[in-house]
Length: 143
Image (tube, rainbow, N blue to C red; front, side):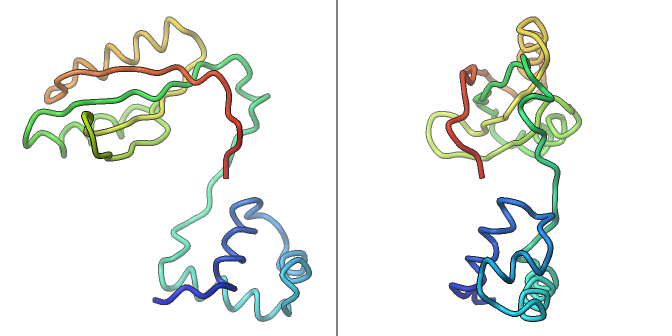
């Protein structure tokens, strides 16, 4: 499917607030409400919009420790490692990356001790060769 410039603008607005009313989005994009609704339906139907999620306000998790956990995986162990990480609710996102590491996980836990425990659990997964963590000090922006 070809994504138009108007589709990109619509996706940008939805990334900011997926709960915005169709009328509000239409006013912002200077389109009719029915045009916006039909574009959203088409983007959903064609799989461009794969779903909607909740972004938790930082104040709700005030004091939580966030870290990028870089993971090196042994050859042919990737599917099992991904499945094990998917089962850990503290792992909020997992990305396959190029470079010296194979995966980068986003871990979120209430305390430093729990981050230590999480990284130990990840390191103990069969197929994980090593991990390196970077604690996130602050988010400059998120979309």
